[in-house]
Amino acid sequence: MKINSFNFLKNNSITYKNNLRKCSEIFKNLLYNKENFFLNTLSEDYQKSLFLKRIFLKKRIHKNILIIGMGGSVLGTKMLSSFFGLDKNYYFLDSLNISTVNDFIKKDLSKFSIFIISKSGQTLETLTNCNIILNNFKKRKKKISKNFIIISERNSVLHNFATKNNILFFEHNANLSGRYSVLSEAGLLMFNLDHKEIIQGINSVLKKDLKKNLINNAATLLTLMTKSKIDTHVSLIYSHNLLNYGFWHQQLLAESIGKNGKDFTPIISECPKDHHSIMQLYLGGKRNKFFTFFKTINNKIDQPITDYFNQKFKKSSLDNIVDAQFNATVNVFKKNLIPFRVILVDQKKPIQSFISLLVYSMLETAIMCKALDLNPFNQPAVEAIKKETYSLLS
Image (cartoon, rainbow, N blue to C red; front, side, top):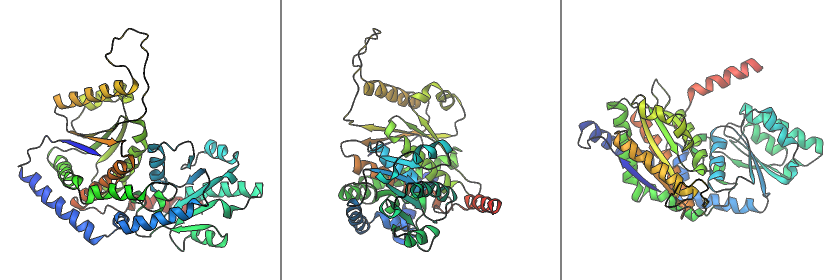
């Protein structure tokens, strides 16, 4: 992963220097104290143990995989499947959508491995969808123990169900927030990814070239938020296989920072499509936004274009056209002194590069929250809606 920072702040400002010292200290404390189990998932020992679980599971897993969950319990797996081009074999039930559910119950799900993922083990939407799928198995007189895999906290509704029905169960650590769980059992068990490359991706942020960049960028963002009144982060995504990363990152930012009257509102823009809709606002609207350009590089697949309209381009392929739009937008942002950075994900080392991006994103978010005196790992306001919903249903 490559990050080019275009810093429109004077790095010798007192505010920036104070933020830099603060972010550096927070980074050290996060790694030392490990107050959330997310930090444990970054260790080599943990990733090696997870790799052994994947080897065990590989003998039992089907080609087609259905993942039932909500929020962080499913956004991570959806992001990984789309980035690595596995969409044909990975399916998701992550909303209460009648037409989507009906489509699934028409399939022969005995040919699927079905992962049910819920940290608490009692997420209403997850249990609702699971009930419908289980009923489908009952009608077809299929054994659920051969197909279902449950990931949840121990002593939860789902854990008890797994025990009673002899279903394979993996523990979701009680001290691991769902949106930070992508490198745990909840995010990686269903993928055959090289654990050595995963570890390399993690270490490139913790120990190598991206470490200094991480701290500098967190300090820059904090300074922009305080000095320039920046309160919105816009992800400009120019590669389709990064779009689900955008939705995962949106939840990560929103649930982590949106507390105590503070926020860094995340917006996702699919580009260059959004050049023809919301880009006018980005360039001509309020200067309260920070932008991150996301794009993959060194792609193996391109689509050459035959020119029937006499446009006389020097090179004509889908990648070349998107590259031109990407570079043109970067140039216009520079000329207009709009604060932004560029993050490039290298397809030559897809696993290492993408894992680096995920670790970088989670640590940057946690550092910013700590600097703003917020808990990065809870979501108290959301819990209020859950309680109210259950009271209405009871």
